[in-house]
Amino acid sequence: MENRSHALVAGLFALLLGCAAALALWWFGGKHESVKEYIVVTRQNVTGLGLQGQVRYRGIRVGKVQAIDLDPRDPGNILIRIAVDNAVPVTRGTTAKLNYQGVTGIAHILLEEGGGDSTPLPGSDPGAALLGGGGEPPRIAMSPSLIQELSDTGGATLRQARDLLTNANEIFDDENRERFANILTNVEATTGSASVAAAQLRHLLTPATVRSVNTSLARAEQVAGEAAPLLVEIRQLTARLRTVSDRLDTLLADPSPNGAGALVPRLNTLGSDLSANSRQLGRVLQMLEDSPQSVVFGPPAPAPGPGEAGFIDPPNREGTP
Image 1: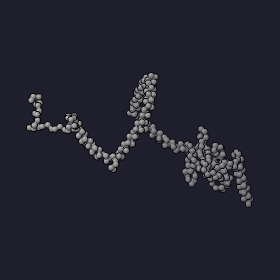
Image 2: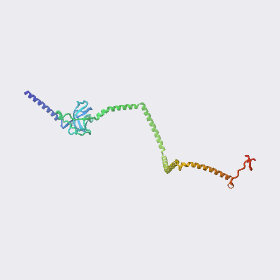
Image 3: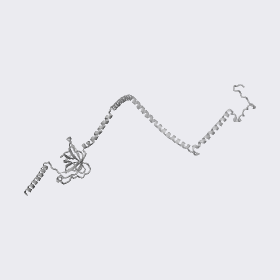
Image 4: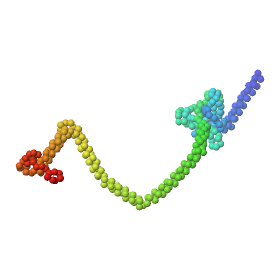
């Protein structure tokens, strides 16, 4: 019975000693704030981040890293347990990012508001976790950092740079360099020709030439102003002629007896009658010219023919009887 009492006393002493040691460690560990725990989940490397690393909220130090472990359910995930001050407004839209401080390369956790769900995210009490209660702290997703993005895109960028240098080497080979030299030579020659042409143009554009050109332009403007009324009259005359032409086409195309198309046969008949009357009038005038007395005494008797009384043999062509 005495041995059991000694064992009980020894056990109580060991338990009290452990509690006293834990209390001493907690007391000498610095200031003690009311904090809540969260777990930051990431699949990227956390190089430079260690235990007791800083946790910052929008640049302000609000906590520290408690532990860094692999996720037992998914080894691809890294679980970072952080303790954050209760006053920090952690919400369901809060995201974490691995940030680096200055040129030292010391990493810390940066909490930022993603602008999504603003519902508060209640953290886990560290005391309840030590006592085996409270369950797992809520998780916060970590977004890729600038270093991670550069690391992911660095390979592709380097490959593109290598391809660019390869293409540049192919472009600037010996043959193409010779072509570029010829192009530069041609450009230089063209520039020289342009300089000569510019000098000749400056020589031609003397003040007298400029005055002459201005005078010519003024005269041309005056002539154009004087010709403007004539052009207006010509356009009006053209419009009138077009109207007359349209009316004439309409009249000629009219098949009725009153139309202009019916006048064509009549004009042809009238022309034939006028031609016959003109020939007859010509014969009358010729007769009056030859024997004007026929108007009073009538037409002369016809001359006797050969063998008739009074017939006179006409002289021969040589003028002899």
